[in-house]
Length: 632
Image (cartoon, rainbow, N blue to C red; front, side, top):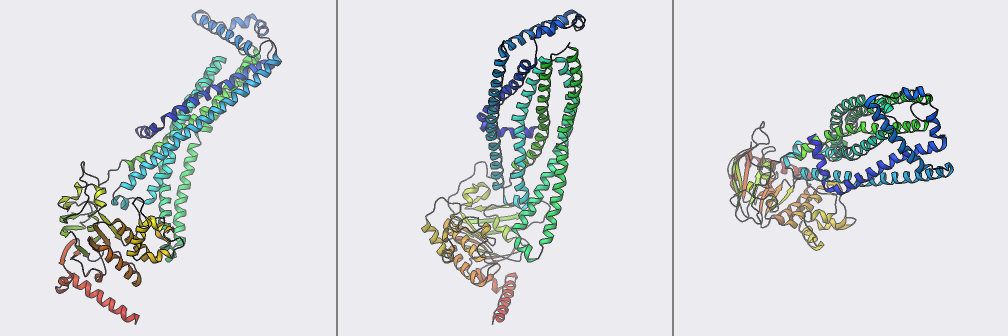
């Protein structure tokens, strides 16, 4: 229930709409009951003979048979007397002496009551939709904010499809719970209370008989609700799996087609949708069980009332016919809100199940957070220093970085080389604080990065990676990503410096061309040059290049490398490169093996000593020489 109360807290900004909806619900309830009340004088106008004749014609034996001696009898006699007086006033008001005119008045009254009943039903639905959709919007916004601010490690551990499912499907289930709380749980109980008052007024004996179904209905509803929560959790996990497969397959469509794995992926998707289908059938079977069972029990009671009450009407000693018919109208009208109330627990249980999954994300604490009073930095003045840094991704794994110490002075170009999997990318990921060291420290101008404000730290840096991240936006907006309005002239200037202007002008709409999701309409070299243009426009003092040219053809590599050289001018650069020819001018080259620095120096120094760098260089030189011969 604590989870459900947390969900309801999101209603606070919309309390005025909620109050308006509740007021409309109250008026709807009043006019709904008035609709039923107006039926009785209509029936009386059409069918009833004078009441006095029926009452006085009853045999004395029957009149004495219903008398109850003592205090209870006096109370019942007083209630009966009050009831008759009220009926007489209503009879005089609605019917009067002329039944033909009374019939017209009652018909007009029924039409007016029906209009206002539906008017207030529309108003409450509209106002409540504002509350429901507002709550969904705010929860989605909170989820997105939480997800987007989580550290890089979170995305490595969590499936994309799971996150999408939380933001879409789970939030929809929460909406059903909100609606259940403030519409079904208020409107229907009010209707039930008013209908019960009317039923008791018409016949308290028959009302007691009708209420015998209530305990059985409550037991059924409670049992079904508990089962539904478990099944709802299972169904949402199945949907998350489907979303994950869909996202992975679309993102990896090229690989799927290259390996002719369409049928394999279709089969995998079908298995997951079959599992989801079976889970939904279980949920439907459980959810739909409450309503028919409750209705069947109610129908059984209603049939008994028809028989029992009909006997009393025929004997003339309990109810006049119009009151009995009115009582039946009330009881059958009562069944609908009772049925709807039976679904409330199901919807609340589903909302709680979804809320648990939503709050499991909202309550996550990111490993990378600002210090209580972070230091805001606006410039880089001296050096970035790694001081005996150890790092691993979780407790069970080995250290990816093992006692790494190095210094990058302002204006230095620090190159990191080594075989795949030795920790090169992990090392540079510590600089923008995507991760924190397990032991040791990384400092900027003598201050530990953990003491600095994250946003201001990352604003000092530009990052260009092998996997270029572009968005389904225009070329101009991708280059100016993260910045307020930037004049087109400045965008063109950095595009020229990045060797991107020529190909951009050839696009259908130039700088206003949409490049597709992840820039799929561009080649790898074109995407890289846009990323370089973006970094140039940001003009950061610190630059991180993570294998920015490793996946390009010779011509694209030349253009990108030329753009990178312009980008590196007058900046402190961390560069990871497989092609050693691109880092010969680096201030310092460090060689990593198994997470440790095994060599450090300039290109010339490292070539003169035997070691991994010389081996890598000779190996690449032989491969490049072989390729030249093949081209000849």
